[in-house]
Image (tube, rainbow, N blue to C red; front, side, top):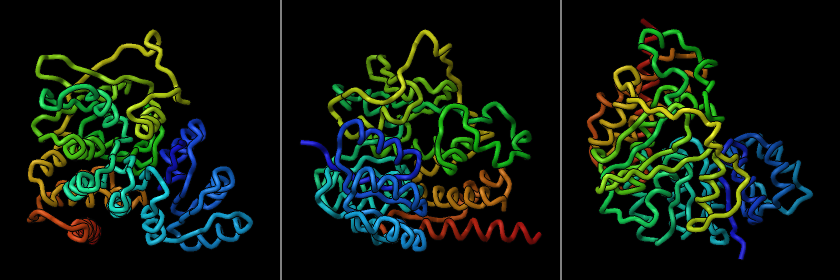
Length: 386
C-alpha cells in the first residue's frame, strides 16, 4: 500500500525536493502548504491533486482559489488551515518543512492526531523539545529527522544499542566565513552571507549557517531526538560536507554516514525507514570528492554556537529564547535594518537578559518566543536612536 503524505512548506527547498521523492516513490499527496507562492503551489496542485492546499497569506490564498477552482482541491488560509490539514488522519506522515518556531504547533497537532512526522523544522525541537518528545511517546508515532546531520546520526544508530553510544559528532560546513576574525566579519552584507559553499537552502537557514547558529540549533535538536545530554554531543567543522555526522561508540568505533550534499537522501529515508530504495539523489564518487578535513569550530568568533550550547545546558525555555532572538535578528538583517555582527549580539544579549524556568505548555513556549523577539526589536530600536 502506497504511503500518503502532507507537506508543510511545499514551495521551499525541502518541500520541492520532498515532492520529487513523492513522485519517484509514487506516494499520494494529501495536502500542501506554503506562505504566498501561489503560482508554484498551483503547479503542484495540478500535478499531485491534493485534497487540501493552504496559503498563510490571505491575498495569495484568494488568488489560488480562483486559479484552481476547476480542480477538486480545497484551498484553506492561515495557520488555522495548516492545523486543520495536519489533524486529518488520512495521511501516514506529515513532512514539516516550515520555517522557524511557526512549525511547533503544527507538529504538536499532527502528533496529537496520531500522524507520523518527518521533521525538517528544527525549531520545533529547539523551542519545545520536551513537549514534542513526550507527546511522541504518548501517541506511539514516529518522529524521523530530515536534517542531513540528524538523519546521519539516525542512520549510524541503526542496529546498535543506545547505551553503548559514547558521543554524537555533528559536522558543520563552517559556512562561507569560517576562518575569518570578528573584525573581518564587520562589513559582511546579506548578499555575501546568502552564498553557501555547499548547500542550496532558504535565506534564513543560509544566514544561520554563516553564523554557526544553525549548528547550535542542531546541537539542541540532537539532544531531544536522541535523548542525549549536552556533554555527549560535539561539533566538528568538515568543510566538504561529505560526512554528514558521526556516532562514536564505547569500544572506540566511529560510524559515519557519507553522501553527496543532497537533501533527497535524508528526505527519502525519513519516509521509507527502515527500508531503502533507489532515490533521485546525486551519487558520491569517492575518487573525485577530494580530501576530507576536520577542524575545531571557532566559538569565540562565532558566538551563536557557544550561546546555543549554554542555552542547552541551562534547559527550560532558554533554547526557545535564543532561537526567537535569532529569528527576529535574521529577519531584521535580511531587511538591511541591522548589521551582520548584530546577529551575534542579539542572541548573546537575549541569553543573558532573561531569567527563565521550565515549561509544560505550547502557550508558555510561544510566549517566551514572543518576549525574545520583542527584546531584540527594542534592543536595536534603542541602538538606532543613539
